[in-house]
Structure formats: C-alpha cells, structure tokens
Length: 140
Image (cartoon, rainbow, N blue to C red; front, side, top):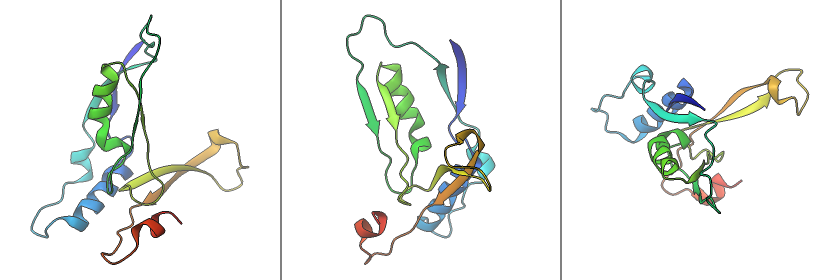
C-alpha cells in the first residue's frame, strides 16, 4: 500500500471554474483568488488500501455536491468519512450545476470506446436566472 497525497483540485480547470462561479455571486469589492492559490491543498490517502478485514458489510456513502461546487470541494469530508470505514462515491454532475465538470471524450479520429485515447472535455457552470425553471434547464 502506497501513501499518496492527492490534489484537492486534480486539474486547474476545476479551480478556474470555482473562481468563475464565486465571481458571479460575490460582491464586486471582494478580491477573487488566483488559480495558483487554490492548487496547493493535498488530501492524505492510501492508494490501494484493503477493506477492513472481518467486517461483514462496508457502508457506502454517495456524496452529491451542491450548486456551484464539484466533487473536489468536498475532499476533506469524503476523506474523513473514508477514514472511518465508509466507501465514498463522490459524484460530479453533468447538468452544468458544478462549477466545472470533467468528462472524457474521444479525440479527433479516435473510435468510440478507446478510452485510453480520450481527451479531457469540460462542462462549465450555467448560471440560471431567478425566473428560469432550473429543473427543466438542468434536466434536458
């Protein structure tokens, strides 16, 4: 078992998405952070750690982020739950409610299904107006 320190933000696009989201809701006089200032936090973890031996069940927590967040923002909560024996599945929504959401897509000339040749694609946050019907917009 190897000890790793995982980046809270595995890609700078997550940090930039969060800054863009926060900028849309913060007062104009509040200085927004830089991408670099958000890229340093690390979460300690054991890569390939075995499940607890002798335990007949393993509780699972499915964690769903809120509007303007993503799976990365709750890394400290997820890792704390995992340290208590929970298996944590942190979702990332593709309905533009996350500040940024990574999805892998086939590159030019790459056949569907050759996942090792896929490239990063990004789904940005979509700010919905006060009078818009959020459910129908996010679930199209």
